[in-house]
Image (tube, rainbow, N blue to C red):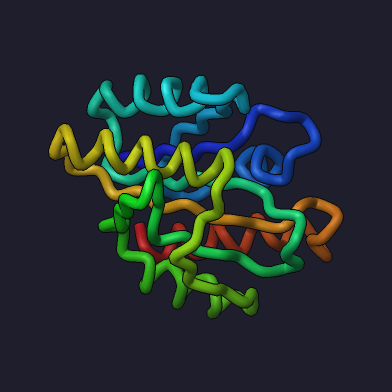
Length: 162
């Protein structure tokens, strides 16, 4: 299993902090993306073009949630929708087993994360690449009771499915 974990390359961003803490048993590459409009998608697609990955798990913070994870299963652009092929039900079940609430969402928003997700899923579909991708909204660091425990819950869940 070849897994790519992505997060924003920003010092105070929860996605970067959590990805840095993750040490799953399955070997993963960690890619920290620019938040410049469009650049992050180019960085991710360049990495996907290598053909080195089976799974991609992207993280973005959402300061509207607390101690909860949103599993985004649909990306949208200009009225067009793409649904992930990732086995999100298994991931959801394993995260819930750690005690953290999970919401499966079909609305990844209208900003950076949705745009990145949509462009990556479009690339995967267009190239007929055998890659499953999922996008997770996580709380900001100030809205996590314990960031280390939060990271361990995600890590534990990844270890169970891989």
